[in-house]
Length: 230
Image 1 (tube, rainbow, N blue to C red):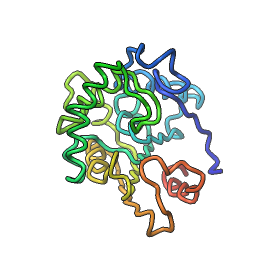
Image 2: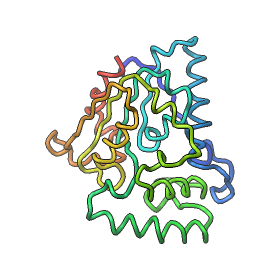
Image 3: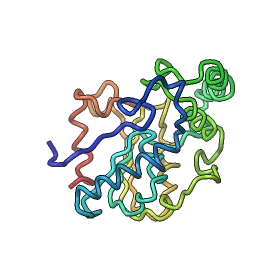
Image 4: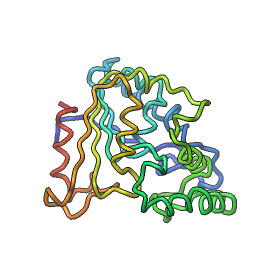
C-alpha cells in the first residue's frame, strides 16, 4: 500500500527457519544478527543492484536491537524501530522488577536446564532454542544489555549514520518501555534519531502493546512510517 517491496524473514531456529524441535537447536540469539540479518541485507543488496540508498530496515523488538550486529547495517540509510529497546531490567517500571528478577534469576534458568528450550506459551509466541534464550537472559541482567558483551562486534552500531525513527507505545511495559527504547537509540551515537512516544487511547486505539502495531485493526498507524520509507 505504501509502494514498497518488502522482505520478511525468520531467524534460524524459529518459524519457517526452524529445523526440528527447538530443544535440539544450537542457535544463539546473536546468530540472528551476525549471521541471518547480515545474509538478508546482502540478499536485498543483490536485488537492488548494490543500491544502499533505497534499503530501509524495520526492526520490531529483537529485530531492532540486534540490527547492529550485522556488519552491513552501517551502510543502511533508514532504520525504523518498532517497540524495540534494550532489555536491562533496571529500565523497566519498578513494579515490573519483581517479575523480571524472578524470570531471569529463577524461572528461565530452571526452565532452560530442565526443558532445554523456552516454550512459546510463556509470552514470546514461539518456542525459543536454549541458546537464544540464554543470550537474552544473560544480556538482560547486564546494565548495558548486549552492549556489555565483549565477545560481540558492535562497530556497526557505532558507525551507523543514517536516520532512525523509534516508535514507543505507552502500553508496552512488559517488553519495550520508553526508557529501554531511548537506551537502544543512544547506542547509535552517529544517527539522526527521532523517538515518537505513542499513547494508543489518546488516538482511539484500545490497545497496541508490544505486538499490536502490525495487526490489521491498527493499520491506520502504518502511515507513521512514511517519513522514513518515502
